[in-house]
Image (cartoon, rainbow, N blue to C red; front, side):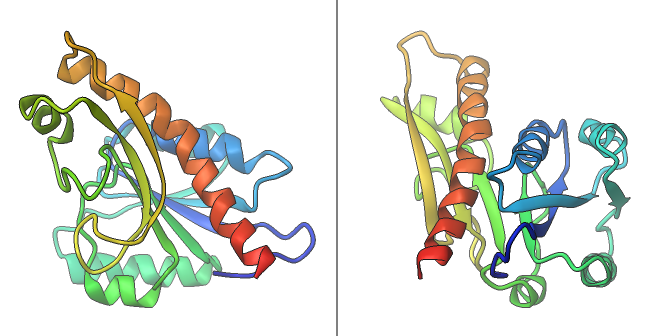
Length: 197
């Protein structure tokens, strides 16, 4: 991770596939004085991703890659990130699994947010599975990305209680609202740790 010097914020790219609500909260966080990051690029694998609208609203560069040919798309993404001096990647609802080669190039500099209390419910359909198993709690996790799906070192988690009449939809909304708070806190945590070390 790049060290912070003075007012220099760490150039960050956010990868999205959908609505981009976590992207929006990260952008708002990045514009605060205390934020150690600036959002300088948005990457998506979906040209219809609603979250791409934030590139226009907040004047942030964006690129869409289909990832049909993953190797080619990833090499183009890596080129863009290097060209724009991106030092940190935040995955925010990015629905593609990135390759080991890509992760190696950004080792320890890729974060992800996942809608469960990892290590429980890695992968998809987290809320459905939590309800099916009659879990009392769910939540969200921010973690470093490593070579195994949703298995990297956990930075922060937020636990929420599952109510008796909870539905997938109501649980998803509750968890998402916590994600918006947790992601910025996790970013502050990793940079504060570095400042102290």
